[in-house]
Image 1 (cartoon, rainbow, N blue to C red):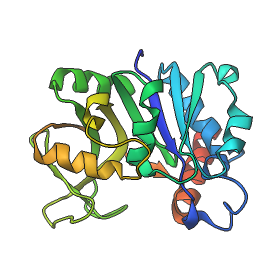
Image 2 (spheres, helix red, strand yellow; image 1 turned 180 degrees about the horizontal axis):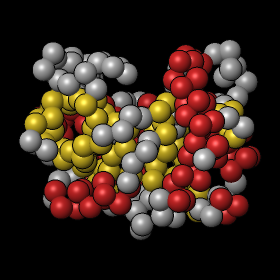
Image 3 (cartoon, rainbow, N blue to C red; image 1 turned 60 degrees about the vertical axis):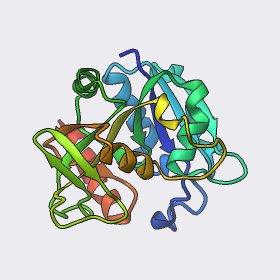
Length: 235
């Protein structure tokens, strides 16, 4: 695929302490491999060629391991938050010079069994500046925060979820660079604010997924993800 993937991996990983006292979340061992290696291997298998890693806290360790990505069959570049963490939205705004007019957004603590090509197809067909993948959640993995009806996202609201919201952000999206036009560079902000604004303006397409996601943002999530890979690696 021609469009690149931005991986948001600059956070402090406080929920994973003490594991992340001295290493970033991206380097946490998951069934014998650093998590970032599992992610990048997966992206390469999906046909992705270019990745931009948005890094902050302890990110130098990630760059030391991954380098230019050639050993993994990828072209990997780096965007740095700088002296203060910029949040998910601020990190993407800063990374725009390394990205294309549209790009995938992938969270650095997620592993998503999903078809990237299908998401890109739906994005192009929608004609909208962004697409979010969603899964029916019913508050199972986290608080549901997406109102998804008839294949459309009517509202995404991470701050004030409502009972009728039964879906959740699956963790993969495609954004157009244009959605960041009116936000300042080097200012911290949350990507959730961009998604919310797009959704209420009818500018956020949706792609439904039917398989659960895996994440290492919490100890429980890490244990489940390790188990997933142990079973998958046996096959």
